[in-house]
Length: 205
Ligand code: ATP
Image (cartoon, rainbow, N blue to C red; front, side, top):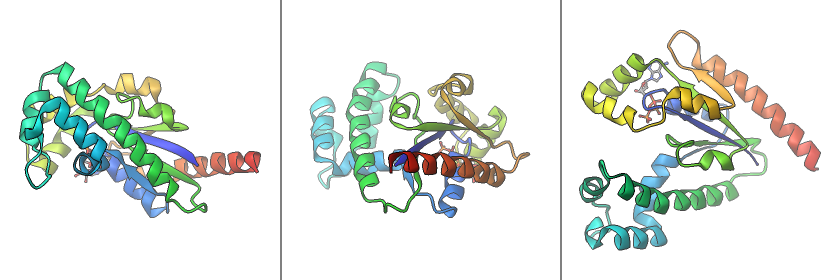
């Protein structure tokens, strides 16, 4: 199936854009949500995390000890890379399993991931879409949504590739600047993706 990766900086509106695709009937795999789920469910991943970061990485009820993990990986590039090397392959496995469950009538699927480019998972997509928004707008949106300070949001933004870097790797763009309609932009892309998916299907028939 034709796979579209979709990403954007924190607060850019990638989840909002994905909700519009969902209304159009396109299934969306939310990689960051799935990553959180499988960190408690995927036995291979759980074993890997315990081995790398200690048994105290999990509580007795099986829930992830976020404080412990964040305490280790925060500002420790090596530990963060180790955690990502465990989590990303598990998310790839979960995505493949999810795709298998989709009906054949689905024309294409979307994979939403904050770190689509940073994790390398864009290489497994047929095309990519970057959602962008002005810096101050992203800051304001996340402060309002999460009830956090500007400094906390800035620290999170600074950990991601900037839009200029991401733009070099993206094939399509959605500008979510509250001037251009996000719905119209999603609908235009949807038509493009349908055409490509259909032509690929015909070529493979
Ligand atoms: P994150 O990476 O933090 O999950 P995101 O890129 O998925 O962020 P959203 O959660 O879609 O971003 O949007 C962030 C906040 O901004 C949400 O509260 C959302 O409702 C709001 N928002 C997004 N786009 C718009 C818009 N065009 N107009 C008004 N509010 C918006």
